[in-house]
Amino acid sequence: MIQTDILIIGTGPCGLFTVFEAGLLKLRCHLIDSLPQPGGQCSEIYPKKPIFDIPAYPEILAGDLTDKLMEQIAPFKPGFTLGERAEFIEKDEEDQFIVTTNRGTKHRAPVIAIAAGLGCFEPRKPPVENLSNYEDYGVEYIIKDPEFYRGKKVVISGGGDSALDWTVFLADGVAEEVTLVHRRSGFRGHPDSVQKVMDLAEAGKINLVVNCEVVGVAGDGKLESVSVKHKTDGEKVIEADHWVPLFGLSPKLGPIADWSLNISKNSIEVDTLDYQTNVPGIYAIGDINTYPGKLNLILCGFHEATLMVQSAFKRIYPDKNLVLKYTTVNGINGFE
Image (cartoon, rainbow, N blue to C red; front, side):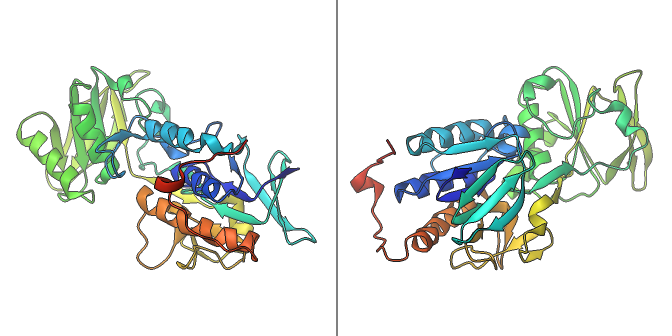
């Protein structure tokens, strides 16, 4: 059985940063993730996607952010159980949690930090006939490596940040032709990203098709075109080597939903004092939690992790005084 101070479910940015904050307080961490490598969505779904709202980094690729976090936590020597899903939870006679994975690996800790992002997730697929015939043959639901699209004709569907950001990225000398299709005239993404897309369209560097939806796919063994239907002007065919519908992910909590936690719309309710759930000793941080005013930003997850660790220390060591020590004074003292 693996024993640790804080057992973290999820190895995305929030989960990884928790290791750093815990390490500063001399708390050891072990992380569980169903993915085969750390990083969560940042490494599995969009490692090459640029992120613009990390302090001190005007722009950083999601995969590079994961690498930097792994470098930052290295002195604290966290343990990892990768490629396994946290399934069952129970308590022993010493008030410690025991979490067992789908492969039977047991972990024991006084504190659980659920940092599982969107939980178990799958892409939202559009209702287009014969779509499955072209999956991996021109239809992709995530962009892992933009180089895959170099010199290609790419159609992107969606109106959120992911669709906007990838349109901007691929139009910058990567794809031969980029077409952005959105069912409305307005976009849900960040205003700055919306403006960049509008500027590219005005300059003729992308094709912007609004008030439309992709309603058909065609090609002999691989995607060759998509059919786009306008709300009033009928259908037209657009040549395409790739179609990437970016309609977000459909989140599911998976086995965690059976852990007797208070759930609201697939998110775990927490107290903003320390991001603890209704079960004492179990915390939820990052995209998986919910509370009034919640924002699903990596930056906010870092904040939540920091406060959570302070509370976890007091739970583990109720008789010890916790004095905040600044890294600018004490530096980083890792584990032997």
